Image 1 (cartoon, rainbow, N blue to C red):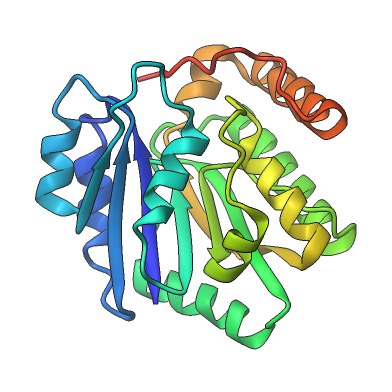
Image 2: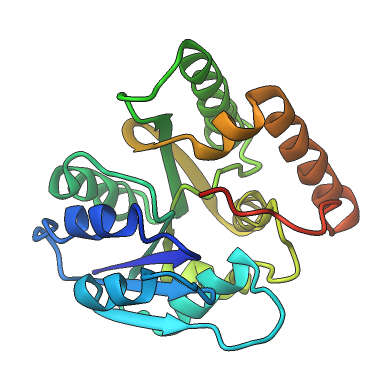
Length: 240
């Protein structure tokens, strides 16, 4: 039913927690796939302990996260593909995915969903709450009302047939590949933001860069992809 695909690069600090949490999902047939981009720490060993499948990138050039997600999707077997980051936690996977699957099965025209994305409670600041609310509202507007498609990469759930029809993620994009996929999916079917569901993450990039700088980088790259088909950023530096 569900293939959970997690791209990684040097995520030994948080990956075990994420995979251990997903192991509690028993409501549906599922598989957990870790797609590693060439980690130099213990990420692959941790993945091999918890995941059903581990695929590793062997190229010389640095792999884009889009390529990592596509590599994981290529060996997935289930009807729904879930792409989530290695630091994302879902509080109750069984209840969460029961509701998520119900969206797809109740609305056959829906190709993909995203959900509310918030910073983990133990590190969440007032700025985090304000900016998360703004970003989630933007995704709600673009998906549910404007029908143009919009989503962040922390969590995306896509019908497998729709993902294949769209050609997967654009591997040439080092950033904004997540939003680009939803925009392309929305041209052929429907995308939804399910605000009653949420995932949490530690907010590493926002806390390291600052929200204003991060949002500026996102928006510039998003517009560049939308109008010119390429991102302005040449590299998306990992923050660990």
